[in-house]
Image (cartoon, rainbow, N blue to C red; front, top):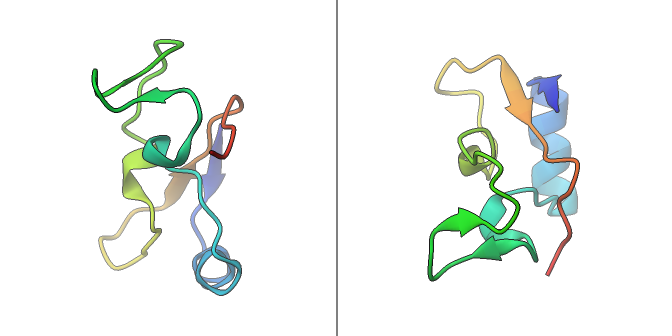
Length: 67
């Protein structure tokens, strides 16, 4: 799921320690470097979020389950 990447989202992600990266997910296999469900990880690799690179969207996985 994609959301607009705004300065407010970046600030709140930092302030509240929000995590949505694949490596923080229960379903991520570090040994295989892939999701157990086969989902792509390109949108989640950007965490922690930053607007400095000119990106306009952030991706969140609907199946994300924090470890």
